[in-house]
Image (cartoon, rainbow, N blue to C red; front, top):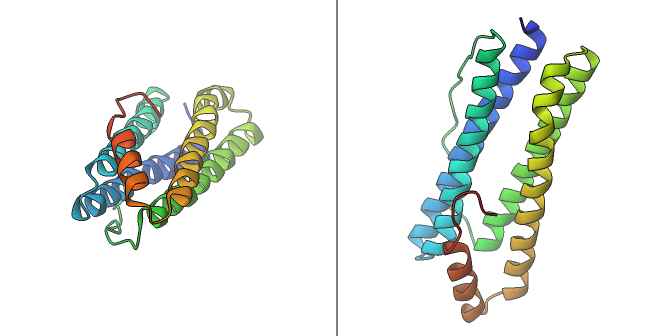
Length: 166
């Protein structure tokens, strides 16, 4: 059986992952409104990835005999000033998620919950990749500035992303 403190923390993380997915879906909708379908596609792929993260925790909690408690998810923002603002928001969200995973890992360590520690290792590694990828995209967007050709190039590049690819 999983300790209640860990169960509660994993449930909070499940909700964070589903909330992050919804935020990415709002970002995708924004990009569609400004006719950047490639950027939108990238955000939809991120949305799907966040759902997979949530479900990985969901299954883990059930496998450990815990009770999944789903919470309400806040309406996502859909209006941004620029692609740069979207990716800055994305980076902040990923950094916040990294802190939450770190906190969960620390709690599991404090409670000597080795199974949870082992399960969370994948999430720690994944967050390094997530932050790196979003940071790189943000840097490219900043370099592109208001150069329409550069934005269209990035739109094509982001639109070619496939599942499981960063």
